[in-house]
Amino acid sequence: MSVIAAHRNHPTYWAFLLHRLSGLALAIFLPVHLYVLSMAVGDGARLDAFLDWTQQPLVKLAEVILVILLALHMAGGLRLLAVEFLPWRDSQKTFAAFAGAFAVGAGILYFLNVV
Amino acid sequence: MAAAGTEKSLKVDIWRGDDDGYYQSFTVPHETSQTILDVVTYVQRKLDATLSYRFACRVGMCGSCAMTVNGRPRWTCRTHVDSVAEDGYIKIDPLRNFPRVKDLAVDMTVFFDKWRDAKARFVPSEADLDGFAQVDPDSRERKEASAAIECIGCGICYAACDLVSWNPDYLGPAALNRAWTLVNDVRDADPNGHLKAVAGDAGCHACHSQQGCTSHCPKSLSPTASIAGLKRKSFAALLKGAL
Figure 1 (spheres, rainbow over the protein chains, first blue to last red):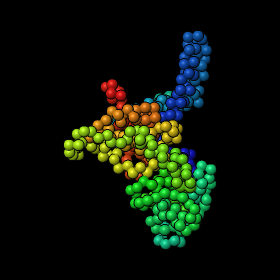
Figure 2 (figure 1 turned 180 degrees about the vertical axis):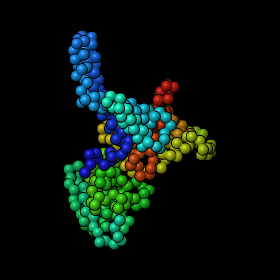
Figure 3 (figure 1 turned 30 degrees about the vertical axis):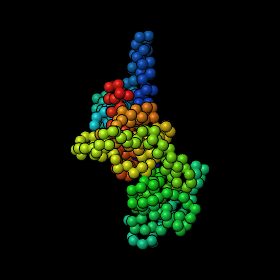
Figure 4 (figure 1 turned 120 degrees about the vertical axis):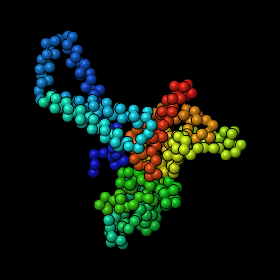
């Protein structure tokens, strides 16, 4: 019937899920990122070759997704800090919507910048 | 909306047995302003007298008739069929996260044991013996307590909570919500005792703020708000060395 159990299908659960999944994706990305950076120390020519390879459109698209993930995780984290450390507000769906909008906006800005 | 009368019927699947059970299908006449509890009662009285379920007040006060209706925990006496039926179909399960006794009746012992474990009971002070406590209705503490005090103990928040299913020791939204009302009760003699009881691994800090409790509470309470309050208060108490 739906992709998510009925009792989980509400905005703040989606916010939790996206925060968790973006965090996992970034955790997987980070070692790869550091490995590529380490080429600068050991093998500069290899790094240059890799950087040339990253000019492909598909890699650029992956970069846009990465920026969205970063923005999503940051906005989600700020949302959580606001929920747990600021006085309670009933506009929780608005918080979640702002976090999502910030992530999409960051992705669009980055996309417009790289194209 | 269906017209008045019984010309339409509902297909109702109801869980039978305990953990090892099955869905039994019933056809129930559709009525105007019919509640899910009306449907279950119709099945029990007219179709199968062996169906077990629990209810008392029928008007949303006692908190005993909660069940899972089409995948969501709900108070069945105040849930209209017309607002939840999907093309005339209703699936009714016992509440999630509770041990099943039989059919739609669950064992709520662990739920109320956790109220005890959260020290969610009032601790009187000697001063109470001298007369009535004066509590300013406009004070911040009174307002915080008032916002959380109307819990009917139905267990819907507990059933909606993923943290309860991930960590069976987690005290759960209702017990923590009750603890928050006592932390804000200026008459209570042991506010730090309440905070200590809920500041452990299975207490308020285990909450991921998914807000399933808040989304489903039939009394429109926000246990997440109460738990966030406990997180702030227990953190402040830790910094002051009171925990």
